[in-house]
Structure formats: C-alpha cells, structure tokens
Length: 113
Image (cartoon, rainbow, N blue to C red; front, side):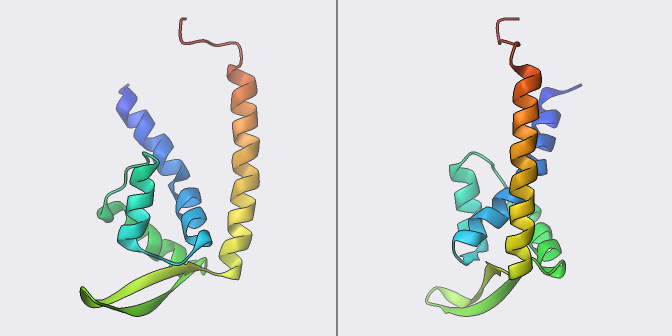
C-alpha cells in the first residue's frame, strides 16, 4: 500500500469542506480558490476543482455570477447558497466529531513507534 495514495485520498475527503468554507467567506473565482487551497497545502489542480464546483452547484449548495474582467472574458464567481451554508454547518459538526474520535483513538501513539 502506498502512503501517497492514502494521503491523497484523505485530502480529497476534506476538499468539499474546505471549498465550501473558502467560498462562504466571500464569493470566489476558481483560481482564487486554488490559490487559497495551495496556501494551506491542500494542493488542487483545476481538473479536480471544476467537476467538484459543478457538483456542488448542481446540488444547490453553490451558485455563480458572471463578472466582467479587466484581463479578458467575464469570469464566473461562485458564492454559497443558504442550503450551502446549512450543509457546511453539518459538515463542520461531522468534521469536529471525526477529529475528536481520531484524536482519542491515536492519543497513545507516537511517531517513535
């Protein structure tokens, strides 16, 4: 079993939570979302992000507005819907519970073992 594959799966598992959190702060253009994810070392490429944004939009959790750009064609800016805020709140509760139980189950393990 390859460690890198497991680490990648763990990152993918929290990606939806992180994307919704980022967009909940302010509407965001795709490259802005990627920059923020890279800054927290949750590296994502556009090929991963676009299908996820589309899925979240189709689920009614996100919507978008087109805005004119000084650097080319209009840009699609995503914002979170009321349903998205509610879903994000539920995800955060689940995340905090998960972190708690993982911490409990690993509290006696050290890197020295």
